Length: 170
Image 1 (cartoon, rainbow, N blue to C red):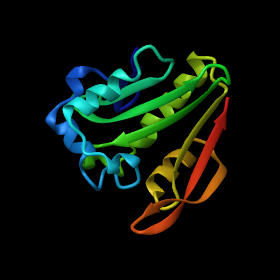
Image 2 (cartoon, rainbow, N blue to C red):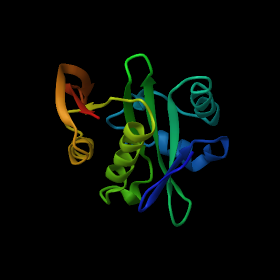
Image 3 (cartoon, one colour):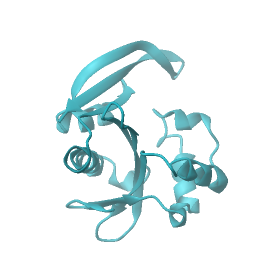
Image 4 (cartoon, rainbow, N blue to C red):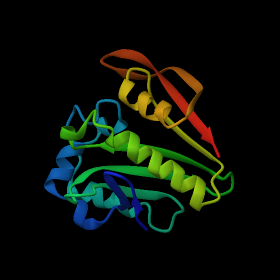
């Protein structure tokens, strides 16, 4: 399965994607600042274990690949609940040279639209911390609306921070 966009291809993440560069994305404090990945020291083995955790599930772990160069730009997840016909998606753009260039927005929209058009999913959700304006913009630009707030849910820079949840229905 490949989902082809204007600038990116979303495809299943594979063992060959676990490179020193990829592991360095996950260990870069700027890249994971708003993610709970910031609490983990990643290795090739931890990345392989995570990839393998999707085997035999309905959920998806995808690579975001540059359409022209084939370079790995980041990853996406879709945690799918078949019983409720919902999916919670997430994204990590590890390659900082493409930050702010719409790659996250395009990738998010591609996956969300794929889930609505090619599966039985009726609702897509996503969440982020209140100070992650880039992620908030990605969700809003893709037509998601604010659904809920968990007040002071996580600690960022020693300060309690709200977690915002967004959704879109098919």
